[in-house]
Every structure is written in C-alpha cells, then in structure tokens.
Image 1: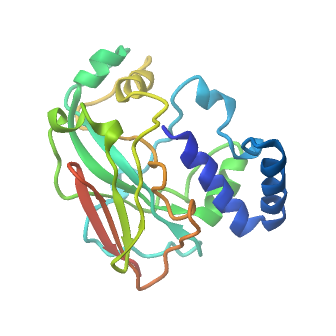
Image 2: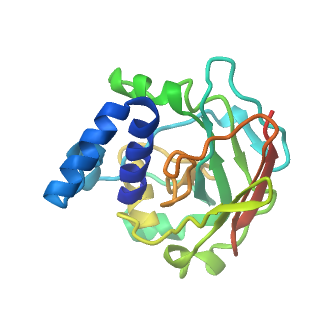
Length: 234
C-alpha cells in the first residue's frame, strides 16, 4: 500500500456507504479542524515500513476474462495498480539491489469485495476472501527501462461502459519500488517470477468516488506505457 491519499479517500468512501453516521461526524471534524479525520489515516506502522498482503496466485486471470461477483458479496470493486515482476532471486536485498531485480512491469487489477474486506481486516487477520477470489493482469509486459524512470509520473484512466470515471495518479508514493521489495526480502527468499503491486493508485478504486460495479458493466483500466485491462462484469 504505497498511497496515503488512496487509504484516506477509500476510508471516506466506505463510511459513506456503510457507516453514514460516522461519515457525517467525520465531515464535521474535518471542517472544524481542517485536518484529516484520524480514523481515515493509515495505521502508524504504514509510516515506518511498507505494508503488504499476499494474495492467491492461482486466481489471477488475463485481461478479457469475464469477472463474476463472489457469491458472498454485494460490493465488487476494482483497484488499479502498477505490477512489477522479479527476474532474479533475492534475499536480504538493499533497495538498489531490489530495484535492479525488476524484470518487467504489468498493469494489475486487484478486485475487492468491500463489504467483506473491512470486517475481515478488523478481525486482526486478513484480508482473505475479500481479495483471494480473483485478480487480473494486462496481456503484455513492458521493460523496466521504459517505466522505472517515470513510474511516479504516470496517470491512468478508468472507464465504465465507455465513460471516463477516474484518472488515477502514481504521484505521491510513500516508498520506492526498491524499498518495498527489499523489505519483503528481509530473511525471506524471493523467487524470479514473483509479482508485486504498488497498491492502488490514488483515484484507482471505485470506493474512493462512490462508484460501484454492477452486473453488465464493462470495466476498462489503462496506464499508458504499462498496459490495459478490460473485463465484462457478470
């Protein structure tokens, strides 16, 4: 999770939909204090080290695959991320070594069942079923030389049924790619071919803007220079 503003805006979006009384209280607090409502901020550990979770590799699908709502959720959301793949093994790497081990970039969509995610994470574990059911990748990968120098400057697009609904930005990342990989490699073997994601770019999820996927929608995600993903939602 690289992006503080994504966390803040997604938390606001969650309370608007699921906890309207808290949402109204948060708006009052922010208006009076002119500061972000504290429950919307990432937890303190996020400011000290990269925070991540491990998803289910066998449920990844390519762009173009129809996506169904999981049977236990009514709130399917998309999350546009930059994905990066290792081309060599690592262990206890420093950030420079870690960044040098990036072999390719892809566009990544981390689908989320939002009505399941927050209760799971509040349990002290997670996320589990809110994330593991499906994720997707662009059909092509691009070289690190074309993305590494500019990845923080990239701006993407989200279209639903052909309408532009968001322009996610990679600006404002808390950590470098090398710092994130190096942290994951501490006393742990990372393998060539492992896929990492930046976490959702600011503006890259529907919950931030109150946009929720519905059966029959066509979702299109694009990040110029990285890739494109499209799915029909069932």
